[in-house]
Length: 311
Image 1: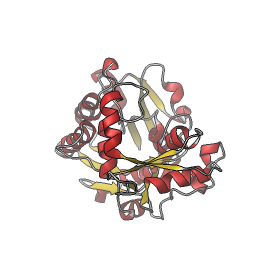
Image 2 (image 1 turned 30 degrees about the vertical axis):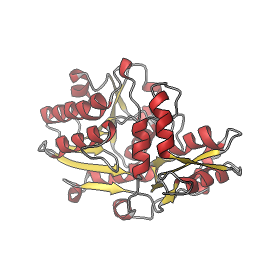
Image 3 (image 1 turned 180 degrees about the horizontal axis):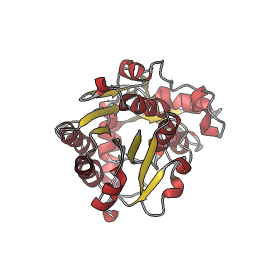
Image 4 (image 1 turned 45 degrees about the vertical axis):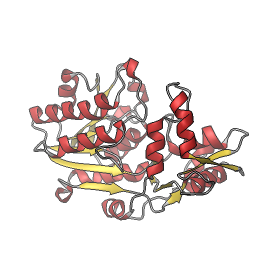
């Protein structure tokens, strides 16, 4: 199949390109001007320069394709550059849906996120509204809501790499978030899923009619606390790390003063979502990929120190 991919130069996008090519598909990838060098397997793709605000670029991207994957998502806005949740996570999806309809492309796969809702944070609300727009579009839509995603970032950035860079590598105690006001009160829980498994789920769903109209909530094989994930990251890096309990309400007070600074590590909205947790069953992912998902293990985190993954 010829597959249009919007959001192919980032962390998960690279794995999507790999999975599409390995399955014998022909990706057409929309890339921002000058960003083609960031694309994994660019030699196996047709590249279209432009962005999701350009109707012409979208039309060229979907022309002659059989399906469209929308994989754009951001964690932080940069309003001065036009990088907003509304523009990229909602308006972009609506524009892509319109381009697909105009080109006669019926199959549409959307990357969403676990925990999206209305009302919620701007991140959650725009993702949720994008889901509704897709499901009500009349196209053959499948939505994926993954928990946190990890894997070798290959020059980009991802969750475990950021934990290592910001909390494990520095010679200071690592911050162990908890939801209550007292130390150890209320674990922050997540179900990390490997990017390779997420990409496989997308590719396997492409020609599976049973996935049309479905929303898949995707988690890895374990539910882990924030502290447990920090310990796994530290072990993968060959380090022992002292953990400093940090109540999220206290961190929110600091964020209220400083999260407008680009160097501040988290925003108030990110802390709100962190406190809500990010847990999902592995059952739907297992069914989609036909095997046990990869776990957030020391072996699967070896990329943190430059060693290739063993899986």
